[in-house]
Length: 119
Image (cartoon, rainbow, N blue to C red):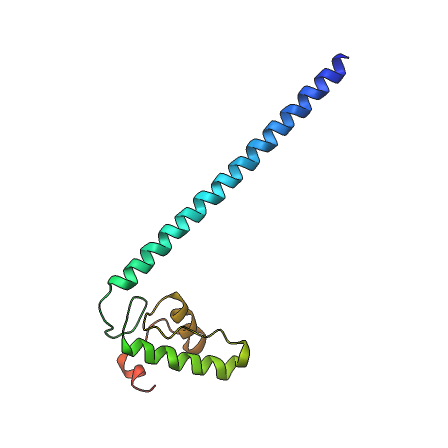
């Protein structure tokens, strides 16, 4: 009987420890997601607060020049990838997606005025 009681106590202890580990992992993931959302908000606020575009065009730039760049990038992505291309929203805001598209098309993260004039 003593062995059965000891076995039950050990099993209960293991279950408690596993539950605590699971709770820790869940809390850690929730905190990580909250931090990511804070970073996204900071990034979004930064983009909104930036002045109208000036050269070089880069993350944070806004305006008609960025819209033209986004249209150009959409055209190039469609030429390269066809229907599988992920299209940018032509919203005039140079964010992470515009930067990723620019990297895919040109390998750069910014557009100088001289390069923009070639579009």
